[in-house]
Length: 155
Image 1 (cartoon, rainbow, N blue to C red):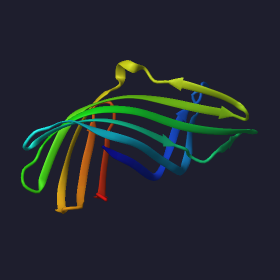
Image 2 (cartoon, rainbow, N blue to C red; image 1 turned 30 degrees about the vertical axis):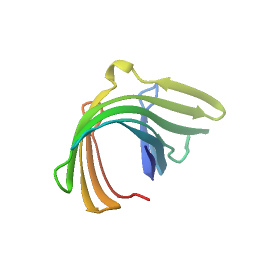
Image 3 (cartoon, rainbow, N blue to C red; image 1 turned 90 degrees about the horizontal axis):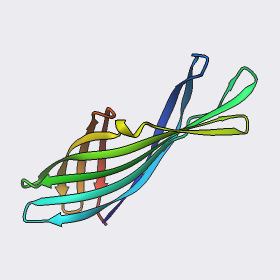
Image 4 (cartoon, rainbow, N blue to C red; image 1 turned 180 degrees about the vertical axis):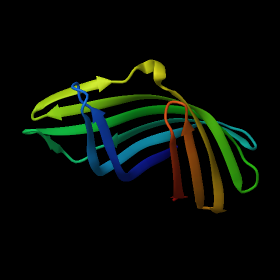
């Protein structure tokens, strides 16, 4: 089992019911999750994962009202990997749901995404640096376009 913790910055762009485009400035984005090994053979592994990523941009005043936006992404994934010496490529499917939460003053509304658009592909690679550290490169496609790189340590 591994625990995922992520921190960074993100922004949100929204179109109001009147058609006005609102761009919230970047601020805190973070996430957490876990991965469980379902199967391990000689060089093949299967992993189940759950992650929650949340983007909290800074508030804006639109006309006289304070507006705030939060984007929540809930993900589960199934990945299969095959190890080749120090290189471990993997691929799998991601299932996700994104919620958009909007506050106008104290009035809060949550809008859930259309679940039919929630399947994506994950392709990545881990490169072993030593027995306790590795570099990870990962891309997500179909339902989102995302790339990530990380330096990971096992302790």
